[in-house]
Image (tube, rainbow, N blue to C red; front, side, top):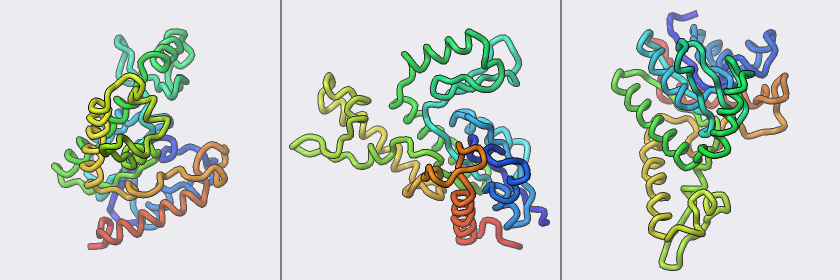
Length: 259
């Protein structure tokens, strides 16, 4: 065991979820990666975590400790994380696609909040824009403190739907039904829609320049066949493939090389 130390953060794909306790060291990618490099590690990931919470938790962790590498697995953009206004910061509720999980999830006001949020106030375009800004902010912060990091795309988050769009005098091409509904094609003029698309594309171009393992390739979760012990999370093959990709990436950049 070396004196090197790694930080992991993300949602349930990175937290100790999916595998039975006895299988964590055998199959789960944070264990596999730390075993390969014989390093200690902190795993701050929490099941159902929102990207905003991941952003805050990575900053807090790197304020307390320094790491040889920080691995950040980004989550799904519509997940929300809320805190009680008259309680401590340890009392939070995770709202995941309308389903409350975490502390106080059974309280009627939490269920009502989740229903109201996802019925009336969940704007995917705004969620995506916020996530891209969080990615840029975190990447800038980590670079400002000379903290090596690797970002991992856990979900597709509709990135390709925006990058594939083309516009000419003949109008838009490669517009998915999802984007038509999201950008209100039936009611907004082309110039407004084009501005909204360009805003996301500009952010995507900037985000792409950060230290990613898989921004231009498939997300972490790409299989409904290879599943973990709970049949809900990525299985052994997916975790092994991710570990191998990270080892290759780290070795190329000499992130965990011996002195």
